[in-house]
Figure 1: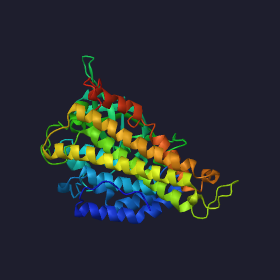
Figure 2 (figure 1 turned 60 degrees about the vertical axis):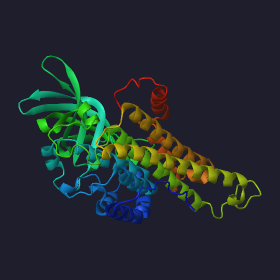
Figure 3 (figure 1 turned 90 degrees about the horizontal axis):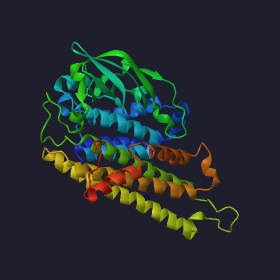
Figure 4 (figure 1 turned 90 degrees about the vertical axis):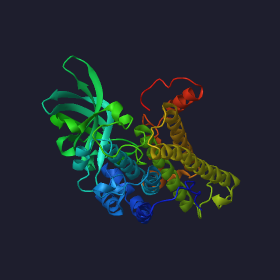
Length: 399
């Protein structure tokens, strides 16, 4: 019996349909995990299955033929994908959160990006590129590492520094077709291998004005020339939105790992001991209960930030800086709980678990790798949360 899913948010008919379709493909995603890892990019079949399920329409506004699902609904679906394949869930999270980010751009940009009603957008948040103003727009050059999902994306967000004629610089986000970028085959890693998070490069690419938005404008959903502003129920704070869906990946991986552990348990003894059935050993019982409770606790904590962010979006308000810092701490803490659950079950799985053909070891490696992401590191995020809880300034604009 799997740990119960704590998230109790009522789902729309559209969300129920997507979620049910994703549940049906979880076995296929899990089956494709090893081959995806070996080729260092998720199988095309995974993308096709997710497309058919409607996953890439979740964050697209309804006026463009999308589903316009709420944050809680999107998180539920992404978590379910994590049950099947950690790397596929991570890539999906990047694509979906980037699609939502595109809704913060001017209407003209949205009309171009969402023309087909379904879209996949990758992104790189480190400002390792430059924009030089020219007539009608900018010229873009730069290189971005760890660009998850770039191999299957239609568009790409790049963080850049805009170089003004007077020497001043300001950070911005530029959106360009993925076809305008080159991908370097340099993704050779021990975790998250199937995410294909390779290095991407743009050389002197023209970017029109309406495809560039100031970083602060994006962070606070304050972009001009767009009709979907105000109390639409979808104007969440950018980083809080990303962190919420990132946490959903972790809880989904943990639930998948829990299921895989139980599947391997029947008939397993404890080597070099008289125990012929590991499930009868009290230590195993304690480990399973503890792991289940960590997963359930992480999912229950998600209800706190999902309600906060939805309440703010429904009211047409941005979360306060303090609330954003708390969300960062809570999401990272939930991800840590999920990771600890997987670690606990991994240590109880015996030596055979290290075989490449055993899916559990891939879930364990992937969740370890994802926890090293700069946004997911628990100590950094708990420090931010602790600062605001103590009445101190978070001392970062990245909230």
